[in-house]
Length: 353
Ligand SMILES: NC(=O)c1ccc[n+]([C@@H]2O[C@H](COP(=O)([O-])OP(=O)(O)OC[C@H]3O[C@@H](n4cnc5c(N)ncnc54)[C@H](O)[C@@H]3O)[C@@H](O)[C@H]2O)c1
Image 1: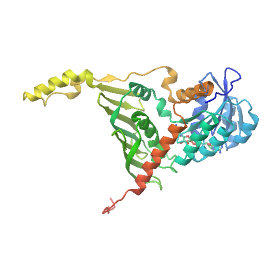
Image 2: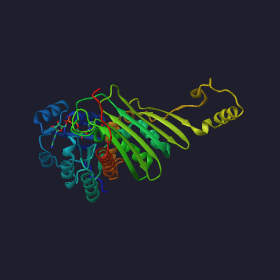
Image 3: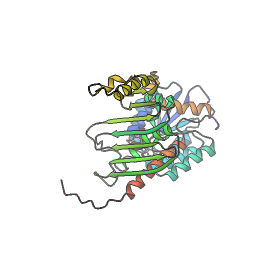
Image 4: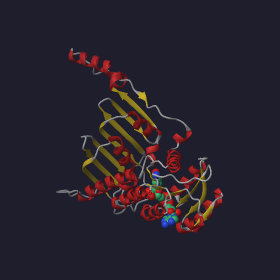
């Protein structure tokens, strides 16, 4: 992959789509000394002008105007609604402009694959905004080199009245699909899923069971109709158990090796017929806090994600969450949605509760 020729120390960057997420990109880029935000683009001109006025950069209401005017543009981020990702990213890649596209990469796996292929053919960095990958707790788990046998994932939150035009699978579960695929590192086999659409036509609650070629099984639950927010992943392997709270950016680890002696002793006692029902199991095992990198850019996942993207742009290397990772997550989400829609319900008649 070739790097962009960077004419000065700071890379000229634009943000396309400055709604809720795009404004976060603008703020995060402001924290990165290697970036110079030269322009924002939004189809709603007043919105583009307002954000540009706040940060002191140029603005455009169309990406072609941006590309015609900003001759030294090194990179762009795309934070328009998902239906617009494919067309805008293609236009940028065709002009050899590296881009970070918000998640999900595209609305279909066919389009996501084309984007990944185009980025490779053009030798240009394409990163996908799977921000959770840059959560320091997730980074710490990825660094442990676990080989998961079983994963249990919950991502539930109260209704925000946003993104109801897409399934909760594409909107929320996709974050976990990306992480599970990365952690398991084995081809996805069987997918069994079910879901319920309450507000509109797309699922608001979904559950999926994924079986990987390695034999690992992952259960994922996502809901946008919960009464509380919970974002957790629990990972079980031969050597350790990790429980991670995405929201608190915190985690606990129980290693088999640290507890082998205590567990062997407990087994012996049991075999000797000792009554152990009063023993507190949680006091028997040694629980560690997950060790994390606590530098400020690591604490804020979006800033870390943008820094990783700019590093790839500058070096000509591949970003950690590239177009192929974005494709794999969309493909898995598609399979979950297909399974939900093909799910057979028989003999179920529910009285109005
Ligand atoms: N990484 C994350 O955790 C995360 C969180 C929320 C949203 N997202 C993703 O970010 C994307 C944007 O979501 P949002 O909630 O910010 O949406 P939003 O509706 O708040 O903002 C989108 C903006 O894009 C503009 N826009 C639409 N089409 C355009 C075009 N062709 N050219 C220029 N501007 C255009 C709109 O006018 C709007 O201002 C979605 O893909 C969503 O899935 C990611």
